[in-house]
Length: 149
Image (cartoon, rainbow, N blue to C red):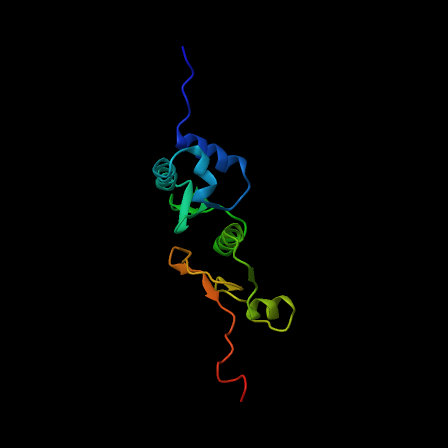
């Protein structure tokens, strides 16, 4: 009897289990099948509570909460950690916000609670989870009137 070939969903689940990543992009699974198969597999894993969709083409590792039975992020750094890893994988250069730097350097005792990053290039996607959205700060543009006056 011939061995049954694993489905795209099973292969995607195995790949997620092998990796220690918190965030995954759909193109990381491109080799498992065509786009529709991959999206279906990721949707099934999301429905089963093994992944959480953070935004367009971005997913995060999940596990079921023992208290509520609902999926929750399975990352040590929570939503912000998964979002930062997604930005890294997307090739978007980012840095800590001024508030985060001030707290880390001891210049402030106010703990930054908002999930925020300062991006150094263009980034238009929205990343969110359970009503929390990644706040994306952009570098200030120089005023066109400031130069040459």
